[in-house]
Image (cartoon, rainbow, N blue to C red):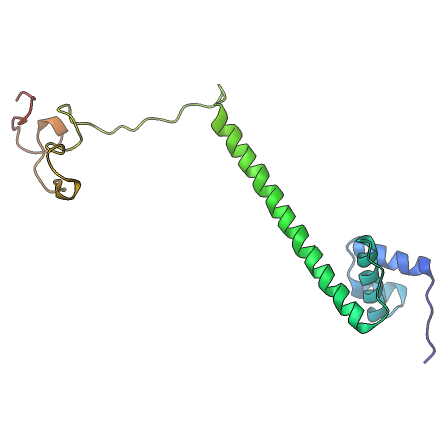
Length: 156
């Protein structure tokens, strides 16, 4: 088979079509070139885009493929870091000063013991020995149970 020589303009057009979103298979069918030739043109265009001259031998070609992979990884890392920085800067803007249009967060509707503390006698006991659910409530807690008098200050 005779070797087909393509012009530089033909190669550039084929690479632009691939870069524009067409599949390599479709470009090969439309332009009448082999897929391996188109792949080498696309690879060479990517190298030239990054300022690297395409290789002439196989060993140098492998090195360039490694460089392209590393460039692609670094570009992805930069993209992630840019997005993270943008997200964090937006979070800092929200924390720095509240906009007057943004309503305040609703407060908790939790009832507190007027005698002090959430649980009667919590001041006297270590945290591990605090009473647990299932014990009768008294009036101060506004819960069910016999209306007992609070041992501290509450009246019946």
